[in-house]
Each structure stands twice: as C-alpha cells, then as structure tokens.
Image: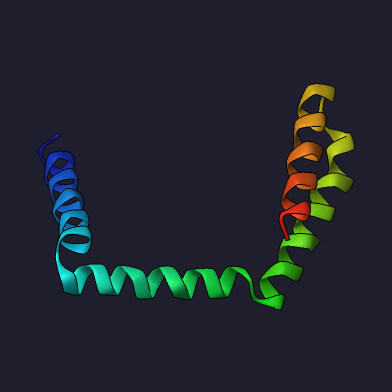
Amino acid sequence: MKIKTILVVAAAAGAGYVLGTRAGRAKFDELKARASEFAHSPQAQEAVSKVADLAKQNAGKLPDPLADAVTSVADSVQHKQ
C-alpha cells in the first residue's frame, strides 16, 4: 500500500513537472511531435493495416457480438489512415 502511494505521488510530480515548467512543456511538445511523426510514418501505417486485416480474418473464430466489435474497430482504424 505504501509503495502504491509513493508511485502515485511520483507519477503526479512527474506529470506536474512536464506540464508545469517551460522546459518540461518543451520536452512534452517534442515528444508529442515525435509520436505524431512516428504514427504517420509509412511503416507504422503499413503495420496498422496488417494488424487490422489479421484481426478481421480471425474475428470469425469469436462469438458473434465480439466478432462484430472487432471487425468494426479494425475498419475504423483502417479508415483513419
């Protein structure tokens, strides 16, 4: 219980630093830009497409409501590209 409290306080302090200081904000913006660049890279888009296709192919093995949900999510992910 004590370790959990320490971890929560440390995470809150880290988030406060990142969002509250100029240096932290600049670093956050840099990380955000890198993440966006990675997410829009051709390699990442190709991987997303492959995973979505694989999920749709294997959705038939699941019960109907779950299969419909998996197919719907896979379609929405592919259309966001």
